[in-house]
Image 1 (cartoon, one colour):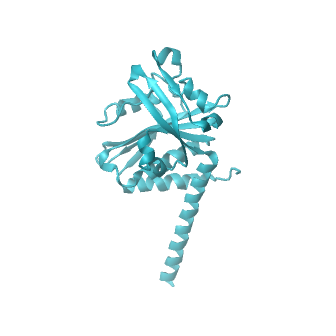
Image 2 (cartoon, rainbow, N blue to C red):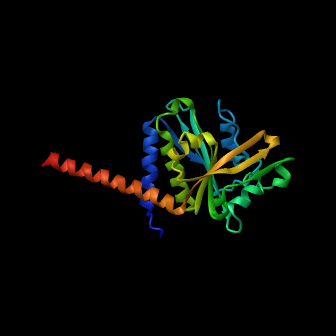
Image 3 (cartoon, rainbow, N blue to C red):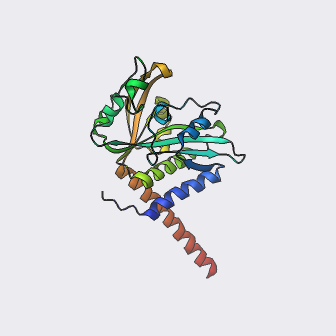
Length: 247
């Protein structure tokens, strides 16, 4: 599939998702200062600690290569966070990237701690390479759950990632309950395999066995274009209805 997503398509895709989130009571902001981000996420009741992927004491979160999204309610209280970063995996696969712990740490030998390990048993991870974006640290406050917000929040993240990086893949690592309850599907992920990251970081208290979920470049293109075409169709119907009323 050739690149034919126009800037206007991406802008419309993001703005529509922003508007839907705002209608549900979330005001969205973005940034790339992860010291600020950690200062915010570390104070959120009910949220698990941010993993090393998005901690500046563990990872190189370079300007233009990572960003965060924060949603606040009408009282300016934080109700949602998520973050994305870009990896250049031109010379290695995602499987190797995860296995060597470089997905978590800029320097695993210095930062990972004793007995740390990661095993990736998802077969497709060996074929995921190039410009690869990772989405994680997703949290939504209890009173905002069950409103259908997750799909809008996914669109905002995917649209911004496309606008900034146009990646070859976007992936996340999610707990099994996300798969069982269809949460990963509602976020927009089309592909999934179990045991994507069997992660052990004793010093961090992390013992995970997560699914790998992902989108290809073509998947994201189709998502953006489908939303754009739907918006055009809705506008066309509204215009025709207006013509009938005026006529």
